[in-house]
Image (cartoon, rainbow, N blue to C red):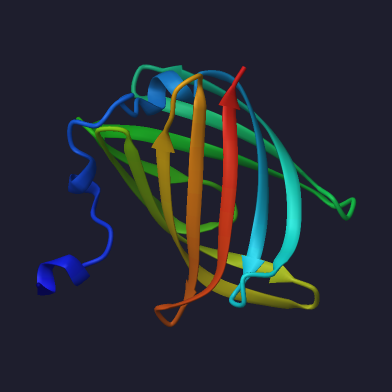
Length: 162
């Protein structure tokens, strides 16, 4: 009975399809729409994202441009390295250290730390990113933003390969 309380694990998605292939999915343009919810479930931010990915061997570059519904914009450039089958690492200028990622079946999981500015304060948060590849070039991303191990916010992004 206790094994059912263990939460989400990447190996639960072994053998599921369509298979998550980061080098394929994030190669070329991707359009996305997202929202951020606070700890109460209230939507506190909505945004659109234009992404373009490219790969040279096992090293990829993913350029993201966020346009928030309140008029703010943000850009991020990820460098993603495939380390071994299903294992990745990533860096970006606003990521603390190195992000670690892995795939299994249709699922992708990323973990990283980011300093997130909100109004006049900056919060250091841990991101627990889960993505699932769907049919028709769609990828759904659920991120759990944590402070001291407690989820303080959730992020949902719907992506579609163009």
